[in-house]
Amino acid sequence: MFTMVSGLQNYSEQAIQAARYIGQGFMVTLDHMNRLPMTIQYPYEKLIPSERFRGRIHFEFDKCIACEVCVRVCPINLPVVDWELKKDIKKKQLKSYSIDFGVCIFCGNCVEYCPTNCLSMTEEYELSIYDRHDLNYNQIALGRLPISVIEDSTIKTISNLSYLSKGNTESHFNSRNVTNFLG
Ligand code: SF4
Ligand code: SF4
Image (cartoon, rainbow, N blue to C red):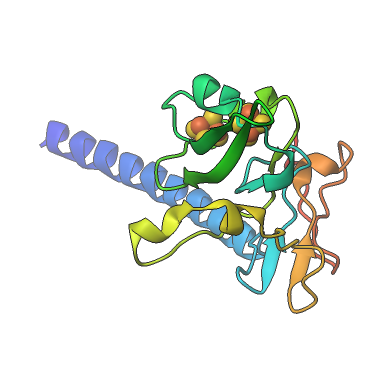
């Protein structure tokens, strides 16, 4: 009889302790509900990409000397440089240039090593299409100027947290404020 009573007592103590832990957990959850959400409402709000963000590659046809350095430094020899040798002027002449963004890993090697700076990384990352062949950009598609997030007046831009000084984590222009995010 005694062991049964002490067992019940032990059980009730453990149950109370567990209930207390659950209650504490609920309090933490409720405390989170009290805070403002830290969410970027894409596509109405967009983060401004960092200065060295590696988005879609931009290509300037007139600057390319068809040296094929971009092909040699590419991990998968991706850029397709089509050229012909003009014997009269003893120079290579570029006929066409393409990069398939369905295969590109956006490492930026081609941009780094291009001797004439005709390649550059843009901040464009919205490249989704329905047909994978449409990701194979020719020199015309590659030469299109990128759409800048800042210049789009239809959306609200939000600066990246890394742009902000330590301690200032107020990324939204409204009163949203999250503390202790950067530690
Ligand atoms: S970004 Fe990298 S993977 Fe893409 S074409 Fe350039 S070198 Fe190749
Ligand atoms: S490295 Fe630059 S200049 Fe040379 S082929 Fe590639 S894009 Fe043209």
